[in-house]
Length: 195
Image (cartoon, rainbow, N blue to C red; front, side, top):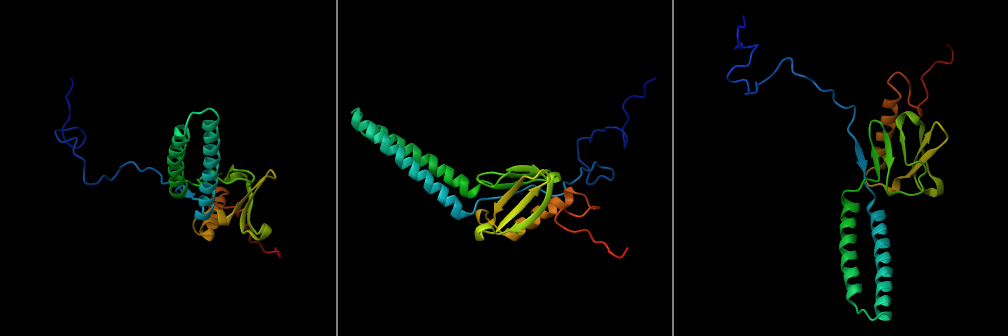
C-alpha cells in the first residue's frame, strides 16, 4: 500500500519552494585557496605600445596615399584607412590601459602576456625551483627559476601596481604549491646543525 506523498519536514508540502532562513546541513563548497590575480601593464609601457601602433598606422596611411596617387583613386581610401585605424587603436588603447593583464597568477601557475623577452611565459608552481630578486642592467626584476633550468625574468617596471605586493603574491603561491610541510624553494629549511 502506497501511503502517498508525505507532508511536513521530510516531504515536499505546499510551501516546498520557499527557501528556509537557514539550513544546518546545507552543502558547503570549498573555498579556493586564493583568488586568481592579474597585474596590468605599467602606464608608461602601455603608452609606448600605443605610440608604436600610431607610427605603424601612419606608415600604412602613407602607403595607401601613395597607392592613391599612383593609381588615381583619390584620397578616399587613405581617409577610410585612417578613420578605421584610429578607432581600432583607440579601442586597443582602452583595453591595454584598463583591462589587459600582463601577468596572471592562479593556484595552478603563472602566465605572462604582452611582455617579450621574459623567457618562459607560463609554468605551474610545482615546476618552480626558486624565486629571487635581481637587477640585471639596473632594472629590478623578479626571477622565477624552474626545475628544468628554464626561467622567467619579470621586470618590475613593466607592471602596474606595487612590486613588493606582486613579489609576495608569487612567493606565497609557490610556498602553498609546495605544501605547508616543506619550505618554499627560495626559503632555507630551519634546522639545527648540532643535531
